[in-house]
Length: 357
Image (cartoon, rainbow, N blue to C red; front, side):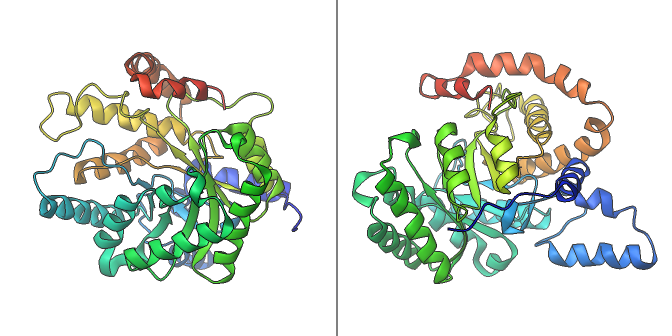
């Protein structure tokens, strides 16, 4: 087993600074000579680079990922037929790429098939996160290494993908319920697909902080984790999972940034009477989540080009406002957080357990 890689102080300070201001903002200061050459070098290394987007290093993968990425869910998307749905996903994906969003997380069969189709010829302009969760470790019949490999390869075949950038196995929400053998099988399956080049990196999704902490400390094969993080979440002053994440150099995608849409007043449609207020709330939440430099990116489900542009606007406000006065962000969010918690549906009450992470 490989030893855990610890960040040097220089790397920690460097990565924290880059996360705080965004590569694009930091590189804008380089205007001539060697500085300009360095700026161009960074541009060429970042997939679908756009100067209006912020980029963060996805842990030891080394990938520079857009600080707001695309979640696979489309909960509030209202369409009349399949053609309209396909057109919407194609337009949203294209808008994401054009605005510098370079990662999409697809976490079920429908999402994988939809986004593989929507990307089409632009597949190499966006990193693809893959979890055919119906065939993964959340269900007993798929927990052996042999079955996990078998169904992963079948998912690639159905989606007409030669490889994915990240296979992030969907473990039990309560990961601690996995036996040691089941966990070992998850890792063995991931290692096999890494060696065969069918996934570039391997990760795990769960809602169990203590279990994920142990997994990250024990298995260096795990490069990325996905776990809830909302506008109400805060880093524990001691024994936070983010201490382990930083020490082991693991990337983190934050799921449920809008607390299953309980953040909003309306239905997210373009003609909603609360559209402008809901857009403002979305930007506040995204800006707040990005104050945690251990989070590589929140992954909201975006259902329109307007929402893509609103997410990018959150990056602009972060540069202009948050770095100058973080207290204002906290003040503006406080009443919104209260409403968000009060609006949580019964099936998402568990998100309250993620107030301290």
